Image 1: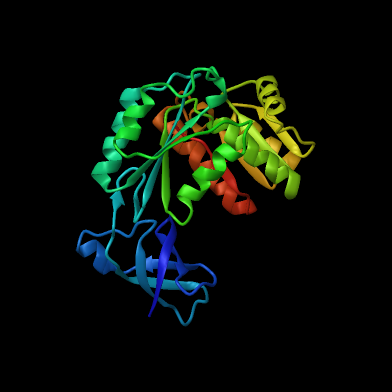
Image 2: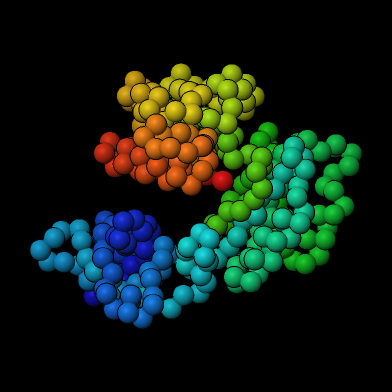
Length: 287
């Protein structure tokens, strides 16, 4: 019997990374867990047995004790909550920030605060006075901006070796981050396709120019029709697909308005199927 870490859960399978290294093993869970009202989670440390007649498959037979457990997202043994807010554009929602801090403490996680867009602060003013409140409760605070790589390096060191979940309000730089992911993929691996239903292609282009994320192998499409998105995938043949966001996409196969439960489920299911059929990494943004 071996020990390992569940790194993915999908369609009844738990993908376990062996503690001694090697290939991930696709495992089913023993029915005993269901009888006891237990369910394995991503992040669980487990004991598992390999099947002798099916290479690369196995069975999870025991869950090892958990340090922490979250409901949203459903994940176990997280160490740190990285809470990301911008200092401006948009203004930080301090009530939401306090809520994230309280939930982190309740779950037994170590909260770390990262504030983005600090280049928008007046140089003579520095960090706002209200930030000192969070320093006073012992919460590590990192001020970052896109123009200074050194502002991120200390945060990387803070999170090194940790299992971290990320939380934050809308507008803190999520789309900019994904655009940078697409740019780096295009630069090192080949075509990348970034599909947006949130902005026009021109707006994305301006942001790409502002953040130096322009590349000949990075393709941008402003679409909300899922069929058109798949058409772009056929035309570009990308190595990675980023869709921002699920709430703006519409599948012509089902009824309902964009962002409704029926549409979001249909869009997500179609993109998962696309990812599996074509072995295509898909990053799907949701709100």
